[in-house]
Length: 256
Figure 1 (tube, rainbow, N blue to C red):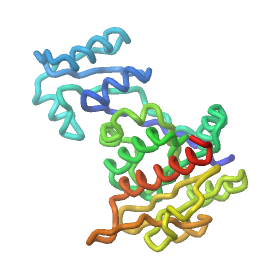
Figure 2 (cartoon, rainbow, N blue to C red):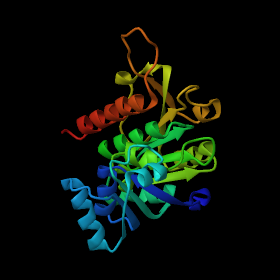
Figure 3 (tube, rainbow, N blue to C red):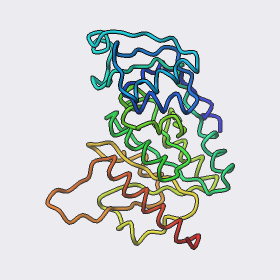
């Protein structure tokens, strides 16, 4: 795939105890660790031990300094500076599926702008066994400290690829036998759809949903039945509901 060679390096600031600990445990190179001076909490001491074990530069600083450095304002007394994050390629994601002997299961995000939604979807992708996430290069959230924190560490285990043109990626993936289902309120109820086999789940922007061009490249649309008084779900919640319907159907098809 010609367009999937695109990679992008970005300094990653990781905040929060769980996210920092997962960064160490996943093998990510952490260059510097900033810790609240005098903090003796067990989880922080565990992080400090991991930092020493891996040779990260340790800095014990005041709460004011941490507050100034923090992007999320929820640092919990620890901030790590990790080696630049390198995006995966779409080919990397397909190889991951092949290595597991599974039909590809991809999640494509058409313009998700809220980093908390992006992080939550990456977390869901990991837990649901998706092989990777594909996001657009422009007009969408990238991988930031807020995304890392919202993913609860899943970012370090789940490949995320950037595509200059989501529709072009879908066109090439369709030639490899992957079908695409688009989340859409006007679609057929998801329980009546066959969501097994090689599949890409497309989730749209928080406000406008899936764009017209991307929707045209989807093979079918699926809706989530709703019985309440409002007419839509948060994007990350919708992604979770549909992802787990795919999981359910895959397990049923395999006789689990």
